[in-house]
Image 1 (cartoon, helix red, strand yellow):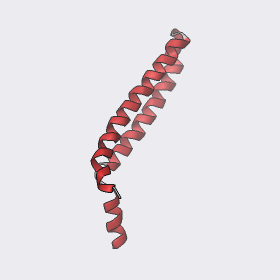
Image 2 (cartoon, helix red, strand yellow):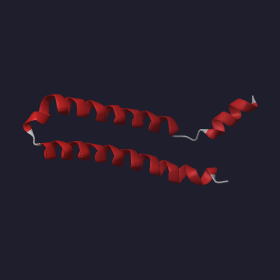
Image 3 (cartoon, helix red, strand yellow):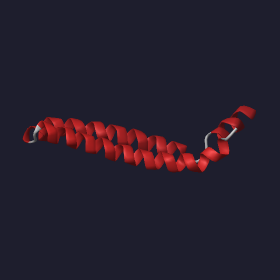
Image 4 (cartoon, helix red, strand yellow):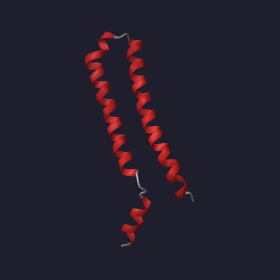
Length: 81
């Protein structure tokens, strides 16, 4: 019984949905990149292709950064040693 109580206390609320969203964002970015390269990249120059992929990476990073930093700020104080 002690182990189950300790495991529940170690996982703060909101962790599971953030992990799921992180996985969805990662695979969404991969799917976008594959579709873009397969169907749309030929009509752009190399510089434009790189810029579009970088913007997609920045958007994904911003989504994950805001989501995880807000969670970390909220629950990080509870885990201080």
